Image 1 (cartoon, helix red, strand yellow):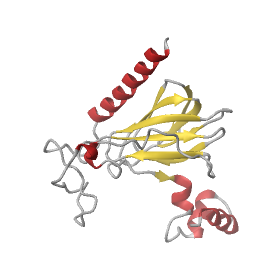
Image 2 (cartoon, one colour; image 1 turned 90 degrees about the vertical axis):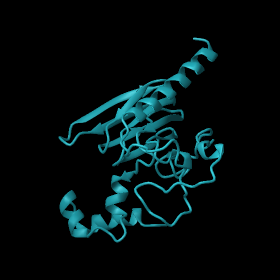
Image 3 (cartoon, rainbow, N blue to C red; image 1 turned 30 degrees about the vertical axis):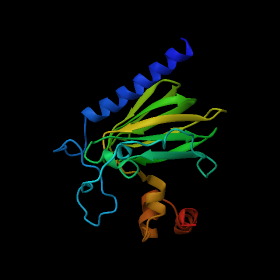
Image 4 (cartoon, one colour; image 1 turned 180 degrees about the vertical axis):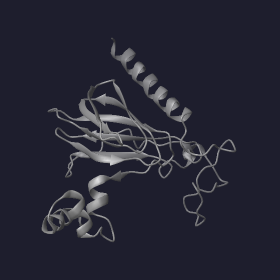
Length: 219
């Protein structure tokens, strides 16, 4: 396939992903054409209150245009394009992210409590998977141009086992899907989860719990 045709095919695929996510909206239905989020308002509702002075820039962002820096502990970086970055997404029930992975990089096991996620591989190859509430693992290797879906609320991950960088575009059927990283949630909570709870849950001794907690302590 010619480079131009391949690029057009990818763009159409990404647009289709967004439309599919929007059809299965997890957020409440909108009641007006637009409700651009007033991120500075002190009023708290289930979403954001609308502001009156809106412009086209409220519906625009270039935040996903460039790869993110992956020189961190996990070798990956999630760049969100949700309502907090694009105020015009308020009440629309969709958002996106870009995830970049260094060779060997991991987006560690986590959940999105408010959204199903669908990822489209921009380049590279990833091992991906999710675990059902019956503790069944669904896993697959996906590569350039392919798609994989993570059902709402289920623990899932992505791992770059290759020798070159990888990246995906992720779409969500929520303006703010939320993310809970399992390890950070349990071992880095504030105030902390009691040692005896984690010790019994993971069948490890208290000193081991404290050692793990020290790795997730705020820097």
